[in-house]
Amino acid sequence: MVGGVSTLSVVGFGLFGVLVGVIFGYFGMGSFMVTPTLLVFGYDATVAVGSGLAFVFGTAVIATLKHREMGQVDYTLGIVTIVGTTIGIEVGKRGLLYFRSIGLADGIVTAAYVVLLGGVGAMVVLEALGEDSSAEDGEGTGRLSWVPTLGVRPCLSLRGGVNISAWMLVPLTFLTGLPAGLLGIGGGFIRVPALTYLVGVTMPIAVGTSVFAIMVSGGIGSLSWAQAGGVELAIVAPLLLGSAFGARLGSSVTDLVDTETGRLYFGIMLVFGAVAVAVRQVGIRLDVPELRVLGVALIVGSAVVVTGTVLYSGVQALRRPHDVSPSAD
Amino acid sequence: MIDLASTIEFLRSVSPVAFVLGEALVLYGVTGVLFDRTGSTVKDAIKTE
Image (cartoon, rainbow over all chains, first blue to last red; front, side, top):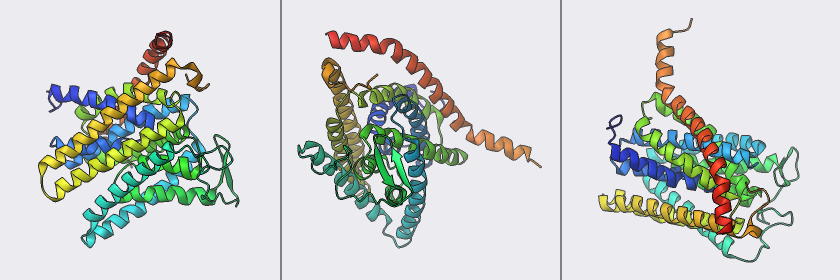
């Protein structure tokens, strides 16, 4: 036993950490997998949420430093994202409290979670599978053509030659924080596609900037949960140990696999996540423990499949030197 | 006046986060050394396979 946790569980957390680390390093998200898994294993909600958040903080520190090495963190965008997202989260939380007061919180949260995960995932998959690039503007960015740039000053110059008005950027980041506050999640799965498709930065920069924002917000949240006694080091330490290696692998692969393939994997991961969350929520609402376990099994199973595919694609890219980007380390 | 007892209690309560931050930084350094040393060897092996 280590700190009240069995040795087998500690080893299991380490292996699970590798999976989450690869996904977090590659996609800039993955926090939605940890807390439900801990809940299924019977941990108290305070420990599950607090430890999950502390783990996300530690993983985000490692992923941010790695993405920084590769020049994939846009600090200007990151700071604006943190400010806009924080305001959005606060407003989202208040919305959740209101829905809770009228007894609609569970239904709305479940529906919003599945619609957002599934909707964003389907959009990303369709975009990645489509050969037509007319949806993108002429600046060589991934920004969708119908998104206005607003030329009103102050304008911000972001990495990759993206120029956008702060009057456009702040509301966008606020909107990404709104569902995060409403659903009680980190919001990486919303923020990364928003930064890619609405702001127009490349996916590696969107991921690097997103993990930077998660590092700051996760650190603040972890402090709050630690004061409430919710951070269990016997869980967090092995998870982080495994994810440190996974995040290194995942971050390295972002520059090896081409953008469209990366988007496709990201979209598939989100669709898997939507199905898993839907199954788990149905299990909770109908009080069927098997469905709750199946939901988490789907999350972990999809993590295994996507992690394997990402790493395989990285190896394949290394075997084809002409596919490797010049900035790959 | 700084309340020593509440300061100690605060530091004790946030120490898990400090531990996580310290562990993350150490792991970043350790994995960096490991990956830098072995990464190029592995990449070369894959490329020439």
